[in-house]
Amino acid sequence: MKALVYHGPEKKSWEEKPKPTIVLPTDAVVRITKTTICGTDLHIMKGDVPTVTNGRILGHEGVGIIEETGTSVVNFKKGDHVLISCITSCGNCSYCKKAMYSHCEKGGWILGNTIDGTQAEFVRIPFADNSLYPIPAGSDENALVMLSDILPTGFECGVLNGKVKPGDTIAIIGAGPIGLAVLLTAQFYTPSEIIVVDQDENRLAVAKAFGATYTINSAESDVFAKVLGFTNGKGVDVAVEAVGIPATFEMCEAIVTAGGHIANIGVHGKSVNLHMETLWSKNITITTRLVDTVSTPMLFKIVQAKKLDATKLITHQFKLDEIIKAYDTFEHAATEKALKVILTA
Image (cartoon, rainbow, N blue to C red; front, side, top):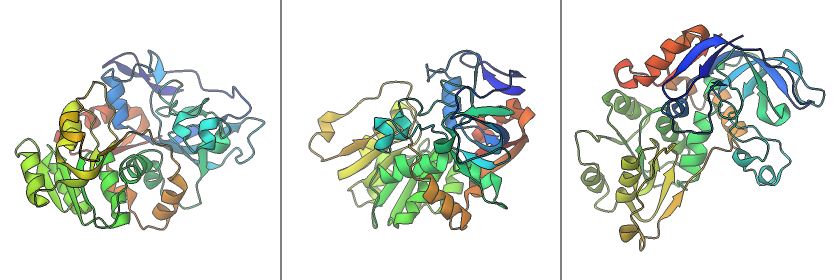
């Protein structure tokens, strides 16, 4: 089969790899029909995720058709149409019992990280009964790809961790796909104002169309001064970091109000400064999280009911064997006006 293979920072290729097989009786092998590229994949390509080693097939999102199941798989059979979760969960370990699937002792975020992932013609899914979701007939595959990762990530790591509640003022730092997923799902809780910060005017325009109250171009404006102006000098109740660089985390520290929340989503490859000299007395809560996908069934229902149009996040379509071109487009999001790209086998 063909797959997108990582060969170290800034090195990747579309090449022939062995088709995966059943290793454990809880496995399933899935034929990929659609997949995508995540911002985390770009962090991998920069060398920010050292657990990803030379020769790894990347990708942790997608939908497909089950090709084969292990003898212990009871919820799925060959031919079933399935959504692949970015998080693999055994369902039995101490972390899974606490619904912290991202820290599963035998799984977690392993696809495209410590085992081969979904940017391929076929993928092996461990613990298939707990790591796949059945897709009803007639569903929009493109929309469902957004449920593999970015919608639950934005919702769980940004909205739920940020304790967003009615009437809150929120700032989302980063208007990429994850930041926009926060924007879409935060509106479940009717915040009074949502401020979105980015350096890409196209993405800021998209954020405005998706429901942002205000947008700020951080390359052209003083974000701190602008936010204080929008909030009567108080700052925001919830600051969501959705980029993963020191400057954007420090921005969240600067604009959060007393009693507020900083919810980190970004994948950080470098240390950040924690400004305790200003935060120690402000009753601030700082949260970090890797998505657990506990919200996927609920988000699945909302998308299926067309209460949330996940396809709005998709800007480009490619064939799977055009994945090198798709990466180039995604890596140059500002010039290509790219959000999520869909790759169809």
